[in-house]
Length: 167
View (cartoon, helix red, strand yellow):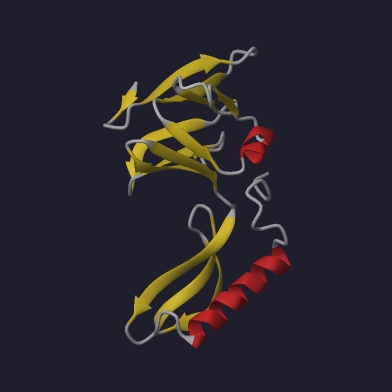
């Protein structure tokens, strides 16, 4: 199957145990951020430098979400959690990067309350509210960000590692 106007081909193969594996074929350059980390999760990269279409074989049970959201395509793990993102930079390039389990999210509440800084799970679940601010870039926003980062560092010391906390 070819995706929209991207020329990304998605095909399915089977592992030696008969499990489905998605294969993505790209007609142009793909920039892999932290390739060794992808490979540790079971990704296989083929034909990267030989000028032929580039192939990415996803880990067994993982799948490609073929419906783009804001010009992004997602790769889901066996539990249907978003674990990686493909970003289209131009007709000549795509970047693929892993997503961390936890992160920060700013959420506007209302004019009186302002914007809240939350620690969130990858599915958007709000775990912790660090505080509110009214002006982007303000001292209060930086304070809320620091508080959220401190919370993450205390409760999830490896939160910036995209391979941690998924099991």
